[in-house]
Length: 269
Ligand SMILES: [Zn+2]
Image (cartoon, rainbow, N blue to C red; front, side):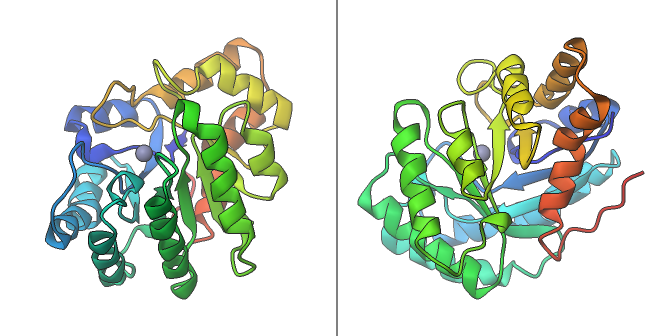
């Protein structure tokens, strides 16, 4: 089945992963800007990273017939450096018109601090000013519930934000309903250790009929599995779930959400 991985950090993966994904039916990926595993020291470090996201990765993906899209921001882990964050936010518009840039992301919270909230709100302003969709990172483990509430409150408090153009990622059973109830799209991350297993994701898909739900691998430089979306397809088929519902979650929903950006040019094969 053709599928899209809407959240995967290909800069951290080898070229063989693109080939494996293509063989398994991957037609497109979207790559949010994230933490490199260390704090970058200068705005030029980010400029080079955005060059890699917008010029290098699309070429590497295209060798295997995969379309590569991306989202730009400074990650919440680096938001404690507010002055550097502001430099990066004011540089991002240089890249917003590049082909394949879908919006602002993955912005969000990490430890739910005041500086993180400040930088989050300034990213929101950027997205509003340039009419960009938003991709949200919600915190891990013990910080997830409170962090997700804080993020949803900041978004809902601003009437200029249209929830239908915001994807809230890394939802789990205790956060997914509120995200969907408030009109946002929700992404489930399939990780070998933390976050969702394919079975837990399939439960949520059954419970919510797949409406506004996406599934991703969030593959990166840590322990993760870039082929996690095919694992989910396998799990849903084994459960006897409807093919149309499976396709909705792994293909049609990403297409519908990404189409909210004018930079998404995709025709199903
Ligand atoms: Zn990520």
